[in-house]
Image 1 (tube, one colour):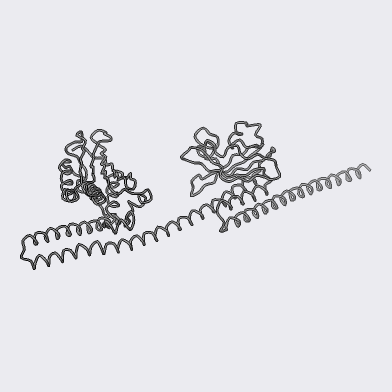
Image 2 (cartoon, helix red, strand yellow):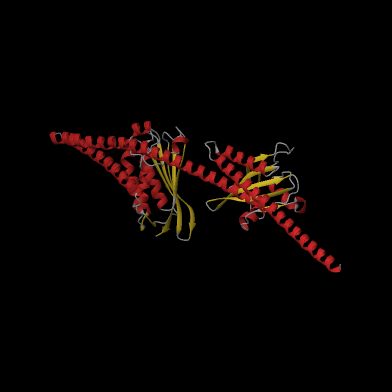
Length: 451
């Protein structure tokens, strides 16, 4: 009888063990099934979000819709996308979704500090962490102020990276405590990836549109330029041919001298047109060289002013030259190119200043470091002036302030772009301050060495 009882107990033990194992297997299968179902749901959600982002709607609407889908599926209280502003050292909450069923106040602040010492900055920029999560904000109250004073109990956020660079943060919040599972974090990261895809597409489309607009603008500008150049070159050529014919057939010495003067003037103008075209061609092909050598600064200025003398007297313009006496007599720079910029600016000033007006050439030292002197050149005139809209196009190749100016005053429209490139190749900068009917002040700075 004892043997039978032992056998029965042994059998019951085996059955119990088998039942336990079966329950464990069923439990694991249930967990696996739930896990699989959750993964499938997350994949379907990401596919839905990705598909929603592939649309012709504006990017702001698409991102807001993606945040809404993410927030509703994850049962969030609030979900938003933030991006840092490098100029202000802050982070801005650009897009926000809030659960309409919950009585949540809007963010008190749309912008918070984002610099060294701030939690979000230190986590994602300094440490380079892949996420930041908090199950209960009461345990870490210092994190509460990291999100613009929003009301919440738990949160998780992941970085958004574009071209391997930190772009912003996706933030998920709940008004209750919550344990953030690995799947939640993975889902946010996948959503961040979908948003990045949209941002890359928008950026690519914007670049293509800009490139197309620039190509069309360049094409129109070059067409207008070629049309203008045919006139700019034909006019002096016709003058040269006409004056040569008159001089050849005339026996009057005074008439011959007058013709020769006109021929010389037309030849100088034609040479200037050709030089502008050749210089711009060299600049566009990267073959424009700067030659540094020592030269007499005062002598160079006198030569430049001498070249302007005839035109200044012809229009009866008042010409004032102011030069800082502390500038070294000999400096090291590109004499030819420096003179070219001054001639271009002075020629423009003469062209656009009415007879009896005033032109000022001023040169002064703005900085000294050892043997290096930063000089500022100003060419100021009392001419027709330039509008703010025209200033934006002034230094573009093949452009002039406007078509009417080109027709009235002539010129290639290349002098200022060439001057800008020369100054920048010398490590300097050039700019203009002007108002219509109030004259212009063209200025540039370059650093030269004491000779």
